Length: 440
Ligand SMILES: [Zn+2]
Image (tube, rainbow, N blue to C red; front, side, top):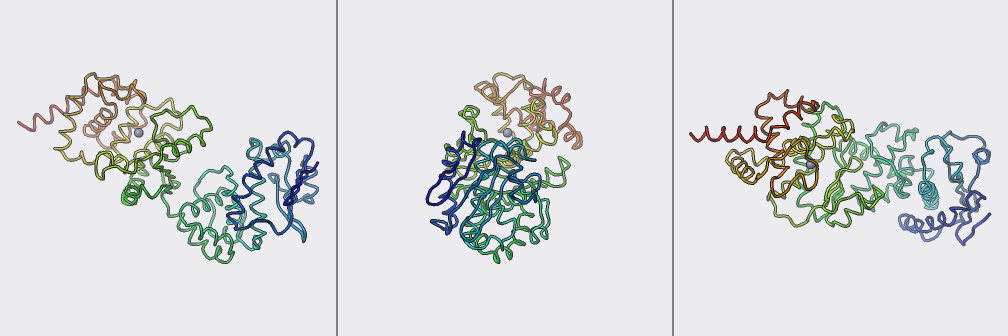
């Protein structure tokens, strides 16, 4: 069966019929974006897309030189470009592809099409593997996770086969930190790409965080470099970890853009409460931030230290709770995140702290059952502020416990709950006593 336009032909099979329309529609949608990146209007040769309904047939065409995870490739001769790929039902039998959805299958076509355009531009054979695969993954929007690199600079320069995650991670870093002209130059100019690889590799390896944020939030993000690297060092010690992959931070100055970004990740529209302005989906720090906050106000400090706060939650979930959400004791997690992040560092000043303490005490009309607090209305309301009580409780623990005991408590859930039963009252008594004695 055959579908033909001026630019391309698709040869497909009986089994492809059910999605062929969507397949074409998706391709048409993405094609122009790819053309735009490569600054081309039309390919120099016609493209033939061939779908193989069995692995055997595809393998035969590849002269049986096929790795067990191969699902597609591109080639060309004097007259045509070719994209060869497995039909969906054959693709999902291949190693590493068994969980692929139709959407992933469409993206594979776009991935190969990026290679075709790259070739059309004239130099795919000369460009480094990490560059040609990296740009194909990124432009085709294939789903990969950002991970710490597990390849050497030599691997990249010698085109050694390493995990595609490396290519994705590096190219993603380039796209997010460099302007479009630079990205195009390393892709189009293979010599320039080779020259820049060492710099890119080293820069990435020294990177502690990757920030994706609009310029309107520079008044906050410009100061991150003074705060976050030190905090990361501190957390590494607390959580006893040697290395940490770069932390991805996505900021938005527009609440709808933020919400759409989260919906894209979660795939469902009903899972984000209407008041949510921050999440840590996929281990990333995602937040909406108002571009007009008064500098140095408490709200400003809260946003400034937000990555330190969220990073505590992320590391606590990963290294202590081992991703078991049911173990999370919300007051403890929130108290620690506020206490350790630095967002309330102005309260290290005793006078300011005393004022803060008295205000919280006066505004606490009911002492809640701390262990039962979950996020939402029960966490903070007119009768008490769960965040403030959590912060004060942790600060109190920090004052009465030896340092080692304070940190050991992180994984002693029974003990945390035991404290939780009475800690708010104990903390109030402790500070009332402390400051009264001081006054005397
Ligand atoms: Zn929090």
